[in-house]
Length: 214
Ligand SMILES: C[S@@+](CC[C@H](N)C(=O)[O-])C[C@H]1O[C@@H](n2cnc3c(N)ncnc32)[C@H](O)[C@@H]1O
Image 1 (tube, rainbow, N blue to C red):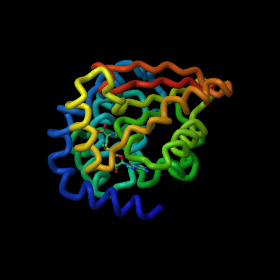
Image 2 (image 1 turned 180 degrees about the vertical axis):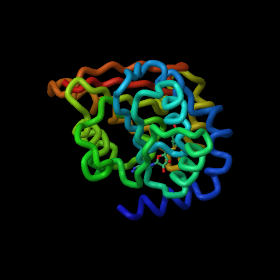
Image 3 (image 1 turned 135 degrees about the vertical axis):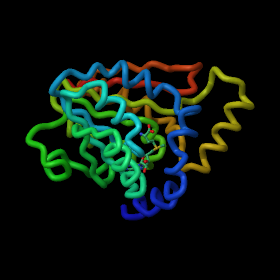
């Protein structure tokens, strides 16, 4: 477990300084997810693997009457996030250090109630225990709440050379498209736990999944 903390800090200690600038060119679909999520006033929204809080800051400015939370395994990324939130003078974002698989709304965020919305933006492909992370997110959602995921897909509608180059390059960042991921989301729907919608984007470069807790 603490292995993940060390691994993420090692990876992001330097990268956090140019992270937002470089990632805007290839973490595609993040803004579409933020628009599609339809946050209502007073709602609580958690990002798992929030990094530098790029997404939370956009949401918190757009929805000043809602409450945003970020969880991340890297203290270095959280330090950067905290500095950005302070300089944007936002008061509706709370951050916590922890792992996707074992946070709990009461202990981690001192909340009385589960979240209205939880999302993973380009973090699920970095989490080897992704099943545990998804199950835990659903457990931390209200009934009727929504889990959203945006991440790399299989790039099958893009040229093969581009696909292989991208996939090799992503391995250096511990990023892997889990081929069992979308079928697993399907089994959650079959079990009657969620209603599922999956949208491939940019020729299967990435996908957006929306799961509504039943
Ligand atoms: C590629 S970055 C994405 C950051 C942000 N979500 C975005 O869209 O810009 C992935 C983030 O997930 C975090 N992360 C990786 N594994 C994690 C885990 N098991 N639990 C919590 N956070 C994790 C990393 O520290 C990193 O900040």
